[in-house]
Length: 199
Image 1 (cartoon, rainbow, N blue to C red):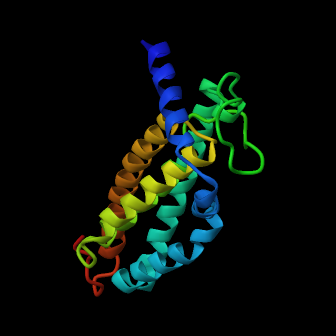
Image 2 (image 1 turned 180 degrees about the vertical axis):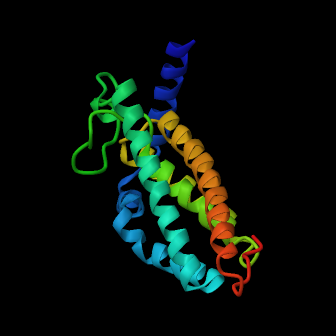
């Protein structure tokens, strides 16, 4: 069963990865690079500040940083625990795939840290701001899914790596959103003059 799943995953990877062409390579290389999304993160932080105010935004940003650290650590635990090779390191796959980026990255790829981190951010921020910006959550989820796809496109992750990362990120984002709500409610108990966030 597991061998069949891995075989299907490899076949789907080769299909999706093979859809790429040189006209789109630069776009997906830009999309997949975290540094290019700093303006988005800054904008989201500003929107949270507008929603929660100075004291609460600091608490929320600390919670978000803890979430990203958590997803990173769990991702690394899985990568080094399961030791599933990235497609660009896998014999029989590496020879027939498109590797778009320079270098392949670390040896192991299950599961995708880009996918888990982006989905975690999408869920926690989308839920925090859902009452004020109702379309933000689905927009961020689409952004995260495309981030996952970019990892397949450039040749560094299998689809199962990406789906697992997106799933774990969504669970983490929801869990840390609940933690953030709890911490804010506790903080507000000590600040009687500050209105409790109704999210």
